[in-house]
Amino acid sequence: MIHMADKKRIVVGLSGGVDSSVAAFLLRQQGHDVVGVFMKNWHDSSVVISNECPWVEDSIDAMMVAEKLDIPFHTIDFSEPYRKRIVDYMFAEYQQGRTPNPDVLCNREIKFDVFLQAAKKLGADYVATGHYCRKDIFTTGSKTRYRLLAGADPDKDQSYFLCQLSQAQLAKALFPIGDLQKSEVRKIAGELKLVTAEKKDSQGLCFVGKVRLPEFLQQQLKPKKGKVVEIAPELIASHNKNTHIPDYFDAATESLSPEILNSLCNPFHYEADLGQVAGMHQGAHFFTIGQRKGLNIGGHAEPLYVLATDTKNNLVYAGMGHNHPGLLRPGLHVKTEDVHWIRDDLQLKVDQDLYCLARIRYRQPLQEARLIMKEAGLFVLFRNQQWSTAAGQFAAFYLDDECIGSGIIAT
Image (cartoon, rainbow, N blue to C red; front, side, top):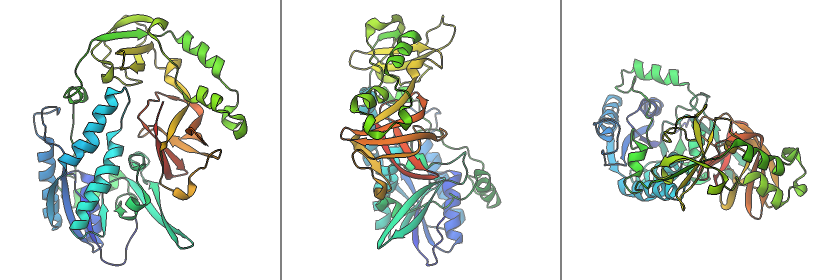
């Protein structure tokens, strides 16, 4: 992490977990004026997995950590902006048959925006979180820029979740545990006898807790019975063969016309009469591409996977087997307005391209990718076809271990 010689006032987002607890300790150890804040983002316990109210338990743990570290502690209610910016976004995306990632948006909109503004009112110079990532600073001429780097622990790297941050947000952000392994974080917490030392990592929605997603969505999206249409792999394989462009990944940029890029990056167009009805579902908006659970259709040699959804006509298209060609895509498209550059100095202009690495989900190994900017937006081609690419997901772009930008997948 970046060590500052001067004493700073740093507000730490204490989530009630071990990572943010150790982050606060490390800053305190360096002599900074540390304040702990628990973000209360959700009230409704009707959709959580256990009968306990998760935010209450987490807030108590956060308070006990602050007490142990002898730092001031506050609980601030962000439930209204969280509902407007995150929850409403989730419902709208699922309603349109898209796959949102609320954790990415939560970092951009809540932790490093609403929380940052609240921290400034407490006199903060910086905000800190327990993310496993790093940042560094470099100067070109009179311009100072910030780099978002992967965490030192490859199994815990969370740079993907921060892929929508801006230079202004990074300037005020600190990631104290980014240079540590998870085992080291646990060891420090154990030696300090922190209540969070052995606490399991949260698996739920950002600052909501362990949530049953179907029940969560059913708060606004009602069940609606519809057909599951099974698509034979031969149909997709034949289509892919017709649209495959040999050596497209390394082709000259000028040879990659909009038509070719669209054929590579847009998904197959499904229609109900292309397959056979295999069963029924309770609402196309409850499913996402690559989903296996919830279809509840037997009688196949291999499980069925969701290939596509049509929320307008309430249809779910499915295919048999993990390797169904309908689950594989050689590229994706991001609309111009949905392209975000953390490193604004690396921003591509129309007809420029960049070889880099990319991932379309957390913990996915980085993939060889090529970014090609066109009038219609950014086209991302992959050296190897990608499994389960869904509209609404964030694709994050890297140069080595630096996350340089991201985009919301349009199709």
